[in-house]
Amino acid sequence: MNSYSEKFEKMRSAGKLASQTLDMLVDYVKPGISTDKIDQLSYEYINDNGGYSAPLYYRGFKKSLCTSLNHVVCHGIPSDRILNDGDALNIDVTAIVNDHYGDTSRMFTIGDVSIKAKNLIDSTYEAMMKAIKILKPGIKLGDIGFEIQSYVENKGFSVVRDFCGHGISNTFHEPPNVLHYGKKNTGIELKPGMTFTIEPMINAGKFDVKVLNDGWTAVTKDKSLSAQFEHTLGITEDSYEIFTESVKEYRKPPYN
Ligand code: MF3
Ligand code: CO
Ligand code: CO
Image 1 (tube, helix red, strand yellow):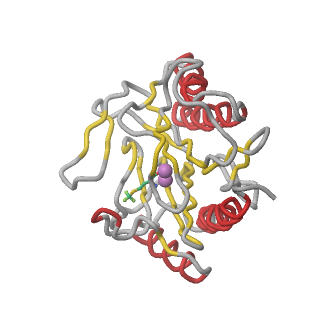
Image 2 (image 1 turned 90 degrees about the vertical axis):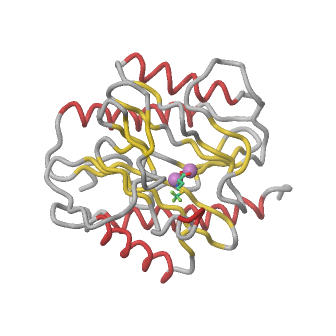
């Protein structure tokens, strides 16, 4: 027992429900489904399993999750858009259980996607995992950004600057900001009990982003493809815990 074990227990429940929602979606995310249907399935699944969808009514957002397709960087709004062969989709689920938040996203590929899309998606997943694997008390926030930035820039991709990871516990977004670019040994020091997300958005082209007139949908300015993965994590006495790991061991597409 320690001062944060109760908080971590709640983060585990919320994280598990969010990741199980993504696991459930694997059977449905196929050519012909709309992003609204994905939203509806997730809303029902989360409610049926004792949670709430955090995005619904969050700052005026009207859906239960974000669906960010192809050149959409993040905060895509579910709609009647039908998924087609060749699409690359990020689904970002945030569940509330026992007043705590679990926030996680994965890429889904619909049918066959280009080699370039596969490379971007694999690199984004690897970048997130490289950053996660260095987590322990004593490292600095800048070390996280450095891991991600150095890895993806070496592959010719770019790190989105306008959105970042965030502290998360009994609120959705709290300090600190977790930047996905940066310099080693800069920023605040990680301490046991801290809980936050790492959610790099990586573009095939330039990092510049603009938000559409709906006030939410962020897209790449150069219309290049963008990918993202997200985990909710906690810092332990000497390491880290991933609260949103897939029970089915789904990591990156293809999932079956
Ligand atoms: N899940 C997103 C994040 O990773 C936030 C979505 S806010 C919403 O922080 F309102 F757009 F859903
Ligand atoms: Co988040
Ligand atoms: Co999220």
